Length: 103
Image (tube, rainbow, N blue to C red):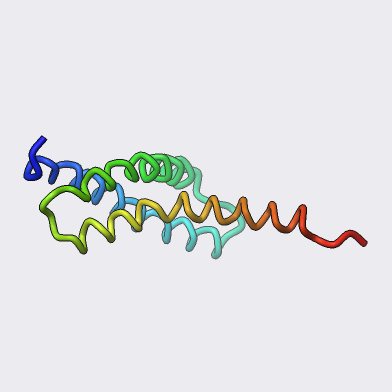
């Protein structure tokens, strides 16, 4: 595949990153203001999270395209954030559970 044809991967991964950027703050605002989340937002957020995990390989492939480097890097970082937050939370839980001093 030629480098010019790889713009398609950059476009797809940028749309996925755009969806993540728009839905995540909406979810956070709704959770902070109320005790419950609107039932329609939760499946959308899960779908967007799964799409962002799918968007990570697309972003890596799009690194070889002739798009602007800044756009490719920003899309890669945004698509990697949800998975990074999840891994960070699991690591902190592990550290808290197993490295805490016993009373």
